[in-house]
Length: 262
Image (cartoon, rainbow, N blue to C red; front, side, top):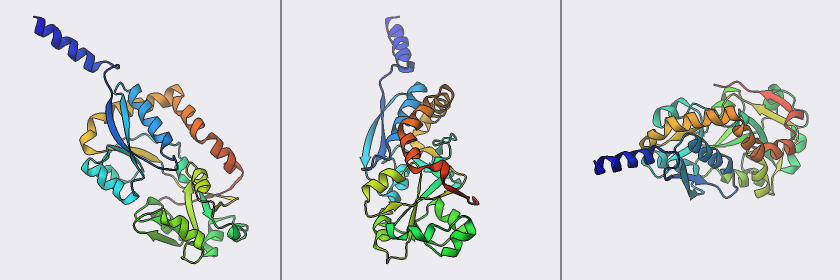
């Protein structure tokens, strides 16, 4: 009888929202662009009664993130949703940034601002023949190609694109970044500036993707994210992490060019 009571107590403790937190391995970046996603994941899983502690893996190169998620070197990451990723990992079908990651602004050379001054439409941007740089395999590559815009696809470490744009002689004219990313990246790369007028928009967002071995987190993460959307905590996190950035960029006053999403 005593053994049975102990077993019941242990089971109750394990099911309790106050059960000890497990550890999940996530990428972190030196420019702190991971901060919102770490905070959102942590709060969502706590809301789903599966609290975690985050163990950081610093500045993992982009091409390695997917393979580390497959082999268990990472437990969770945030990616733009795609059919391929839905098949390889355990996707959580809750958008993370209210579409902000699909709102794109350019990092350019300061001397090139005049080249964008007359651009008011997709046709105008095509006519400039300016080349965008992206990491190999990024969803943006498919978007730009679908809209007839020139693209350079960078194999290996995508962060090389900052120096390629700055050099002015590497066949890359601009680096398109999400409005949630570009301000800290511009600060970290003072040889580049944020283009002043344009906002390109396509319909996609980040999702959390779990390593297959972590599929047990899918249900509490899904329910926790939805709870944060309902109770206003998601909006509060968005404002805390991105509100000042959006104001700095003047998103509402930019010339919006809507892209076809393949």
